Length: 494
Image (cartoon, rainbow, N blue to C red):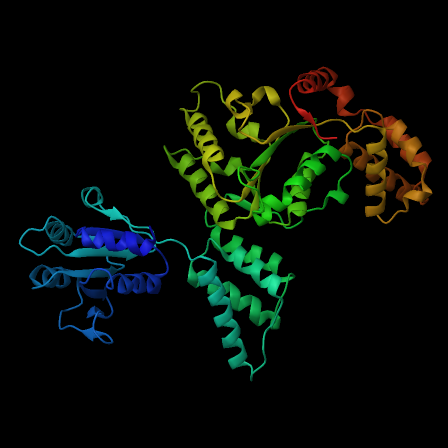
């Protein structure tokens, strides 16, 4: 059923109290206007500034009812025909016992006709006794056709405001812009489209990063998500050839929905591995390869001392992420957010894990989950069960060829020509080093070269490598145990 049919069914059933939470009041009013084509009722709108106005006649007709809440409810009680009453931002007045009692009498239909009273607001919180009597109706977000019309309307407005200058638009880019506007109300989509158009009078692929940033800032009201501006490409990360091939095979299905019948879209991966071996860089490169925004969920900010707040924070963060879809959700060091011994935290970690597992299993949105972890023994067994993630990859210490690639990447990033170095010999000397440790050896070598006022060369780099004790040496037992565990249980990333 469409949302219009759902709404008409509620009106036809004479539902006494509806609650609609939305910032888009004009769309709600228009939706109720359209519902009159299926089920006729007198339609009224109330605001504290304009009072009660009738909307189902030609134009708007003011009434002689005083605009205060009590007189409005009395007028509804005394009306001589059934009506739909849209009360905009009325809920704050329910803090008064008398007003609350009046509304409850109306809802319970004491001495009144079966009206439909609709409380509309950005966030409508009701007293418990009224909440038990209310039905919450959630308008569906606009679809592609409605969003495309918004973009076209804003382009036409720009042309009119700028002396007939037409907006230069690339058809493929416009389709992608419309796709990325999904998840927003018409009002929010209109504001973003207007900003993109008025920036330079052009709609093209270069607008997509700006659109993603604007959409994120609009939706991330909780502050638990972080927009990662610096995504990477696979070419920026050494190794992980098997993982890169796996993602490339699924890119078109995830982004375009181009999948044959029976093939489910990809949902996500878990990256286990030795610290410093590039799990975070791979998370960023997956987003870059898929061509979608990357948002990071900070588990540390979710936890709250008040009962139920942590779970609510997670629900809000996940809801915001789904509105940003298509995107990649990165949960870094997931074991730190879910690890708990028994009920030592009052069961909060168990409830958080339960919600996350349910969402992972049931979600239909285009959110690709990338979770990274260092301490596999701290991960709940339920998270590792087959089917939670599409695949579990292990990011191991780099082999000789990958270490050579790491040297080339980091030397080039610092303006040095890798051809001036014996990269193969340096890679051999860095046996047991992680990518992060190789990078820090290059940084230390640059400091030593700067202090000695000489150019960086192989001698200084080898000296820094000899002076460094990598993690594979400092924590040999833990690293060997992790690699042994992963050998038979995970898929090597490289």
